[in-house]
Image 1 (cartoon, one colour):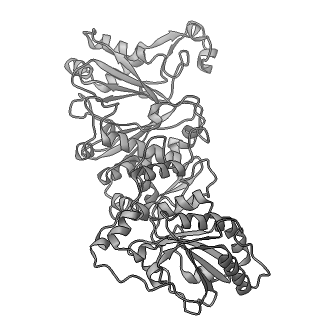
Image 2: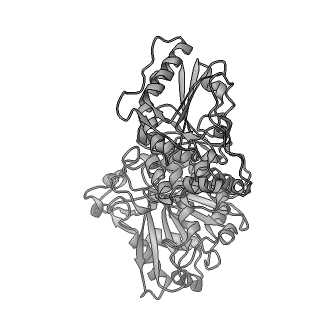
Length: 556
């Protein structure tokens, strides 16, 4: 496309095409700047008369490769209807002519609404009023309107396949428009084309074209309300239920930071929309990310799209599984990720928006929208977005990414399929053994009370006060894991009620069964505020073989 960005897969369960324009709002949300500082040009003298050659059009659209007059008239003839959102007569014309456009196009007459408004406004108005033809828009100073000599909107121009203007109608004039359409029928060799209904009002004067206004007045008239931008995002389905930041062209380009927007990270399960960098950047903008966060978002996207992570299974399951994003390394401090007080809660823009961007990738590009392909019975707030940074400076142990084979100085993102966090309060333990016992048994009912053993990871987020007890006692991570693994055991006979595993079902009643298949199923992180002895455990996403995946954060 010429200036918009086509984004496949960002399409909710509504009547919309498979490929929509995630940046269609871009031109519409950009405000006038340098154009308004320029000296006003002379107003147009009047609409071009029949017999004149139609000027080329400089417009923005959602069409791949842009739109040109030759393209519109190629099949026989083109009807250009210049309109503006604020003009009631324009609305009348769009409403009455819009339902006829598809029949006209089938016969060889292409109808295009040329808005003197931002593209997002044009698309919204056209959709609301039932316009079924093409939609394009102009930026100030509305050069195409000037070249066609517009003084008023609506103004209709009929252009033949030879590029010559065959007729012009200013304002709403039903008889004249009906005659113009029949003229078009002659140009394309059709016996007849449906014309506008002969309903009152048959005549209605138009409004001033913005090309004929003082630029500052035109800018004031054009400026959309912020509420319209937000509602437009909801109408398009580009949201997780919370307000989003409209992904304007300027914002997406800033997010990309010069990276190639056409490069692809691969298809996004379950509906397999293609995750180009441009589309991922649009998700990051929608989520509220700053450009500095985008390398982390890209690394997380690469991790979540690894087939071993089994995003397809996690996205469509009835389980409440979300995707936990764990960030390690220098990038934590560089972008201000919170690993301290309230580390699993609200208040930190990087944490909240990075996690949200990844979830928007799943819902918008992957089609994993609740109630459609996402069949979660209850879900959880972690499915809105869940990102935590490990407090490596406070931790007595090697950080998660070092455990997974990376160097301490590398910045790494790790993705883990997980349940919501369960709080673990312990203010009374005075030995590491007692504390480890409490932490471990708090996880005994995760996933399901009698589902033992768990092969998939349980993630423990250890608060600094609890971590300090293990530091003082000289416990290593592996020592803590092994103690927790050994501590939580029950006889198989006590687990044979309700939902249980084949291991339990086939074991001798006296055989001791551990909550986890091995100590390696226990993941330990350190994060949280300095005060308060509250840790947490996140149960697993189980039954689908999802693996933990880590990716380095790399420059774009």
